[in-house]
Length: 424
Ligand code: EPZ
Image 1: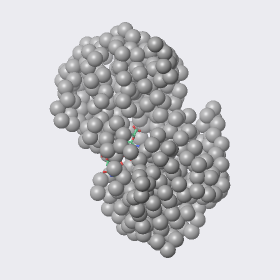
Image 2: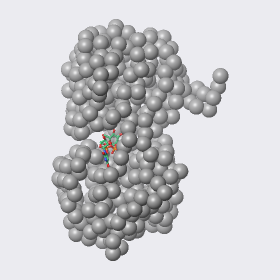
Image 3: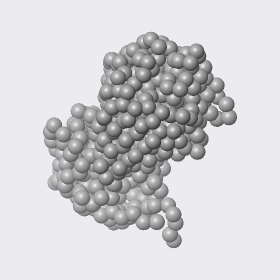
Image 4: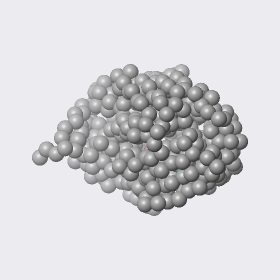
């Protein structure tokens, strides 16, 4: 029976073999696009991935009054003009939680903002209390009215302040960094996130004239300026897309070389792949994983903020452990509900057992194809990897989740020799 929800049909059991070009990082492109709110000058962004979330961010910028031109072939986005509206609507924010990152720059540039509170999502409650408290530390008055966050900069301009993040928060750090760059005075963010996407945003903001020090360390110091100018910036490579294709190659006992990427972005994933007996080669801008005729060894994983093992790679690596020759454990410490792929993998023959925030994996020689359902972005990636490794045919439903974070999935998998087709 056909429907309007896209699915993937995958014929698995064939080792992947070949090269794949990695795209710009979704989680860097999203904050960097919203940084355009901070200037009316022209921003020319390259290596911007052709993703649903990028299109949503561009729509949000247009809703705010900016003019945006994006060419998905070249990956270049040109954004200019002043924001003329302070409102990020629920209609838009409900489709992309990262829209919360409009709050900081809008309050900094306009002196006020109205941003819908993002709802929860499949992987957890995802509160934004740190975003709000951080803005209050910079002199914003914040009210929650009818599901919207109303922020007003007391006296019309935010003032620098010190703020300790109770928890390491990636978009929390990014939101506050984008608020602080136009503050009067100096802001220090303590216990800041160290992710490469935070560093790439800082690089873009500095190209716009911001004064930032310490990005990539737990203490970021920002001296506010009156205004920022436009810039050219190329988005950093996507370390999670890189890790996803390396794991897909390993799970199918193949050989995958990721190009236009940077090994330094995912050293924790690389060391775990080596621990799993994958032959990994690193170059200036490439990483290859070779698991041809090699046994996959079980590897214990505990997710942690960068530079620890990324939570966004947890579901993918669980598939590798499901096919390893022994017992292993995967512990999720960041989100409270990030195991929705487990029941689906069990339907494909995996021997997995959830105990609290840990999955115990007892490796099996092979998985078999089945009809499975995506629940979130990275869970869908793990189901596609499992389908590529499994004997027989797998149908993955609701792959709109995957379209949010993986550019040109089918063509990239086909270029590696995988058999995959999208149907409705
Ligand atoms: C970012 O989400 C990423 N998204 C996520 O990637 C990633 O999984 C996550 O960081 C962790 O690395 C983007 O960058 C757009 P957090 P974010 O704030 O910033 C708690 C993907 O698959 N917290 O670092 O929303 C929170 O509940 C997505 O690409 C608060 O309590 O995550 C979580 O337990 C999924 N209060 C922990 O902190 C706050 O105000 C880390 O969350 C904010 C967060």
